[in-house]
Structures are given as structure tokens and as C-alpha cells.
Amino acid sequence: MGFFSKWFGADKSSNSSDSANHPVNTAAIERLNQLNRQDMITLDNGFGLPPMVRGQTLMLEDVYCDEYQYRLEAVYWFKTKQDQTLRLVEHKDKLLLCLPLTRAQVEQIFDLDEFSYLFDIDSHAALTPLTTAFASDVSAWLGQQYHRVRFAEFGYRHQQDYRQRTPPQSDDRQGGQAFESYYLETSDEQHALLIQVMTSGDTDVYLAMARPMTDIHEFWPRGNP
Image (cartoon, rainbow, N blue to C red; front, side):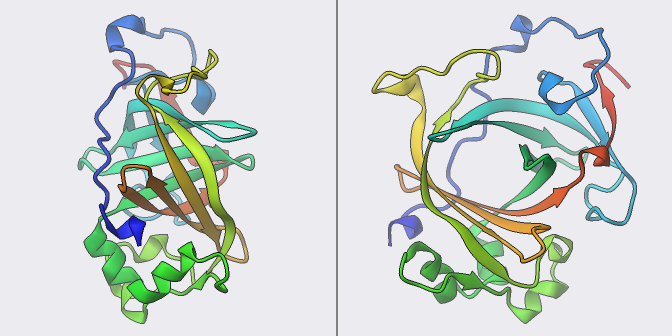
């Protein structure tokens, strides 16, 4: 199938406006949507978060926008001090923390035959991680079983920050790329699996956790702490 043609090849390097276009923010930051590149957040130290991010201070590396039919979703790319990249979005009044997976990790966590059924509209589309996955280094991100919520939702990735302006609507969309999104979540809606298949064939897969916004313990303007 097409989603196996390329794996996780999308370039996450920044195509947003250069930081010189963003003056240093000296005002208080209170919400995720107020952040600019190189601002930082500190996450809560509670046990509800995976160890790799618990109590961590993350730097905002990039912001771009995924456009769907009825919404524009700002995507925030953070990096930990250990160079782990994380994708954060606001989702149903919560914070969706997304861990990008390599193909090797997907093979370690899921049976690939069952994984492929997610792309079949006639399939039951429930996915259970392999038993051995719960002993892996991403076990804290895993739910017990995922059920499909959205199938092949069309979207368009704009490689720029359009939080304060309207994205281009021309046919070429000025360098962005169309994709299909597949979203699965657990019955308690606390864990999720996000898959984005680009028209190029590149496929991005994320394990996600829905957390309260209060898990962002502090906001830091660029240059602090």
C-alpha cells in the first residue's frame, strides 16, 4: 500500500519565518498559542507524564499549521535537552503530546499486518499493541487498545505559522503539501495514535497522550530561564 512506500521522511527542519522576524518577547506568556520560536515551557513533574518529558523544559523549535476542512490546527515542535522531538497541539481543550515514531519502533509496537488494516475503510480498525511493546522505552505512551475515530481526513500542511493570518488558498498552496490523516484513540480518550500520509508517500506516525493544559507548569520567553 502507498503508506509503505516511504516512512517518516518528512523534513521537520524549520521553514517558518526566521527568528529575526520575531522580536524578543518580554511580555508574560500564559498560553501555548502565545509562544514564538525559541520560547520555552516547563512541564509538570507528576507521574501522569512519561519519564522522558516529566519535569522537562522544552524549547519551541518550530510552528506550522495543518489545515482541515473546518479547522486550522497549529502544530508546535518542541525539543528536550536530550534532543528528543515532540509534537504538541491543542485538542478538545486538552494538550495532545505526540511522540514521533520511526519505522523500527512501529514494527516493535504493532503487528504490521494489523496496522495496515487501519487504511481499509471496511476493516474493524481496532489496534492492540504487541505484548512486548509494554516493555519498550515508549511503554509509558501506550494505550491498551486503539479504535479508529477519523479515517482519511484530508488536510493540508502549511510549512509556515498562520496562527494570525489566513493561509494561502491557491492551487499550489506555496510549498505546502496535502495529506490524509488517520486518528485512533483509546476508549477513555487518554491515549491516541495519529498517522499522516503525505501525497509524496512519506508517512508520519505518532503515539499521543491527551493531558490537561495545566501540565504546562511554566512558560518562558526566549532567553529565559
